[in-house]
Every structure is written in C-alpha cells, then in structure tokens.
Image 1 (cartoon, rainbow, N blue to C red):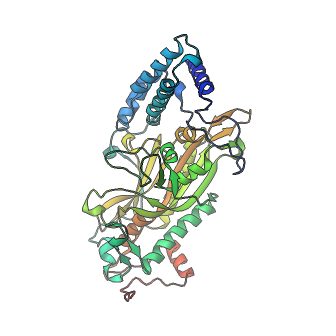
Image 2 (image 1 turned 45 degrees about the vertical axis):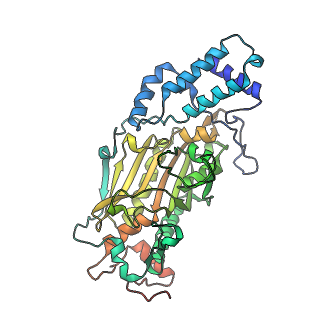
Image 3 (image 1 turned 180 degrees about the horizontal axis):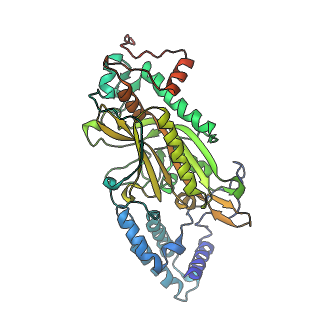
Length: 437
C-alpha cells in the first residue's frame, strides 16, 4: 500500500506539475531562506490508510465528538487506487476527475483529529480529572467583579463600538490589566522563552492547520472576506507563531525552541449563562501565549514544563486554582493531551478556565511543514506544544473577586502586581473616580 501511495503521489505531481505536499528540502531558520510551503500538507496517509489502524481511528473519532469520517477517506483512496490500477497511462486519465478525487481525499483526511494519548480521560467535560489544587478558596459572599467596580468608573461598555461584548478599562482596571500582562510576559521571558510579536490577522489555511475547524451552524472565527478561505482574526498568538514557523526545518540541537507572545485574541463565543456574561466571555481580550517546537521525544516533557510555568504564575498571584487533565471531547482537533487551569471566582461561585496547555504532537507540524534534521541527517516532522501563560479578562475577574474587601474595594494585591503598579507611579487607587468628562 505504501509503495502504491508513493507512486500515486508521484504520478499526480508529474501530471499537474504541482507538489501537493510540503517540500522535504531543508529550510533555513532565517526568514530569507525559509522554504515556502506548497498547497497540500503531508498528512500521515501511511497511518490513515492502513487497514490495521481503521478501528482505532474510528474509536478515536467517536471519543473526539465524532468529527471526521475515516471511512470516507478510505473510500476516496479506493477510487484513486482503482484508477491507478486500471492500466491507463497518466496522460490518458481525465485530469479534472483525477484532480477532484485528490482534492476530496485531502478534504476528508484533514478533518481527522489527532490521536488521543493513552491515559487521557474519555468523554465530555464532566470527566475531567483533577491533578492538582492550590491557594486558599474564598467561599464567603462576594460581589462579582463587574458589580464591585461599578462605582470606580473604571469599566465601561460602549455598545456602539462592537456590540454587547464591548468593554473599556479606564484608570485602575487598565493599570491592573497592564500589570498582569507585564508580569506574565516578563516571567516567561526570564525562564528562557524568546519573545516574538506576530500578526493578529492570519490565513484560513493556517488556522485550519492549527486545528480550528469552522462550523456552519456557528463560525468560531471572524472572517475577513466572503468565504472560509479568506484571512481570519486570530483567536490566539499560537496561530501567528505557527504561520511564522511554517515551512521551516531546524537542526535537532536547536530544539526545543520556546517562544512567547503577547497579543490580542478574537473569539465569536456565546455566553451559556448569566455568570458568563460581561467580562467572562468576551469577543476580544489580551493573552500571553507560549509555543514550543520540539522533537517527538521531548514533547511530553515540554508539555509538563508549560504546565509548571503556568502553575508558578498563578500561585504567585494568590488565587485559588485547580489543574485538570481534560477529556477527549475537550481536546479540539489538534491536541493529543491537554491540561487546563481553572481559577476560583468567588463572586460568581464558579471555576473559570484561565489557562490551558496542549501537546499537539506532529498534527500541526505536518500541516505546516515544520521539521527538523536529526543528527544522522534524517529530516523528520517536529512536535508542537502550546500553553496560555495568562489571559487578561478572566484573570482580572479572579483577582478582583478574590481580593475584594467589605468596603467594596480591593485589599492588598499580590507582590508581583504591587511591584509593577508602584514602578509606574502608583499606588493604584481602587476607589470611586471622577468622571472622565
């Protein structure tokens, strides 16, 4: 089967003069010499089309919300096999039909989710496994963050800007958000992550390669154009970093490569309850994102390291959190394993996700052409991991609700925030402010 597939690929490429896969030539890590990717990713068809893997792939799809149809992939391949075995010369095969078959094969195959790692809980969110817990849990009656700051004149909702989810931080909240983001970014950089600034506008091809699958009933990305192939507003800096790394080949000794980016994130999410309204589920927010390129042997340890970085960040902020290993239905298309950190929000009386970390194995790397050259000269696909160092609005909610006092103000903030606010000419005054106008 492998030999036939290679022959089919070669025949198709020769016939149409196109390499429908990413090139396997070495790409320099410099921007000038990076090899641009071709139109189609090098999906792992040797695995997907092996009959011995069929039942395992079907079971994995079932546990990943049923997205993807491996039977249709095999059906498309069977038609291509029949055409290749017909005895016709490539020049005699109907070009339009042949091209359409290959397009259909890739369109079906790209929807197949990553294989779930052994030991990951199966099922929905209710099956998440608690791994760790830290910080004192405040359980007395508290105001929600939004009610707490009503008299501060520091949170505004100008609906004429972009609808019901619009918000403006003024004065105290703007300073607190800046201190949070500065703290997280500086901490991650101090741990050796290389800072990078990337575009917030990326192609639909890149977002799909990262594992974001659009839904016709409710699009999960903002599209800048008339159809799904147009550019998107990025949901996380992970996408901009992925676009930057696309088509690159590294030397094994360079790995792992650890990057961190502060960016704006755009989401079309809908609130599921009153507690998720206002600042909890918004259409745009700021986030510090970590991204790692590693060898396959390094990626499990890199995921663990990202989680340790996250835990250290939130422990220093003094909020009560729990760490969860997320079940299969919560992994999206790209992750093979994922951990979330949820912060306690005492005003809302709920845990809210403030951070997540995923090992995407070679799922993204294959779709983006991210490779490395091993010591023996073999070119292989890298693994990618990503993790949120801090997301602004939900972390703000947890901070405000945890540190509020009975005077509808804020008590002493954790040291990393006090330090940064003071450096900018504090103290930070959480009290009723004069109107801006």
